[in-house]
Length: 232
Image (cartoon, rainbow, N blue to C red; front, side, top):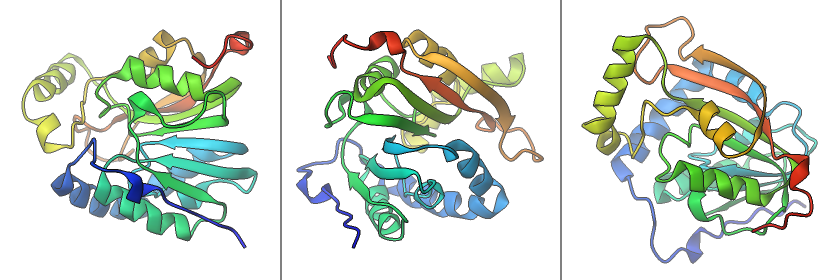
């Protein structure tokens, strides 16, 4: 029998607490599954194998789409309400999923412990992107794979200006700390990852382009040259 556990009860206090946003996000993300997001998740996760760490797992909608070659998922989620939903989703998963509290900037796991890392709509809301990606690089084995699906900067000059203005004012407090104008591809490159293929897209693909619509899906790797460098 598969054993799936959650260490959420060990958290003394939540480093991230956005209960209103969490309820809204849970409803909207579940509704989006039938409007194309389930297909995006399958593309994001297809072909993964071994031990995987998912950072910012939200309400756990990725869990149903991991392929059978994945032996275990460790899913980090700092927001209590979303983490509780992720625990429920973990119980329905085909492989062991351990849902745990923890922020991207200080992952409570050993160095070089994972074959792959999944970043799905999380870099927009972390407090310190370079530090979070340094942690991803630390916990991956050399040659380990990053699968990413993120939204961020996109559109023309007017849209860029709109995204930056919203980031300085209303959007982060309304959207759980989310930022609209970050560039995930540039951040991964600056963090020392080797970029693989990626594709820019809008979500919804056939709908109106909103400030949060501009997304990118792709693959990166921790360099094999990191071998022997230690976990940090």
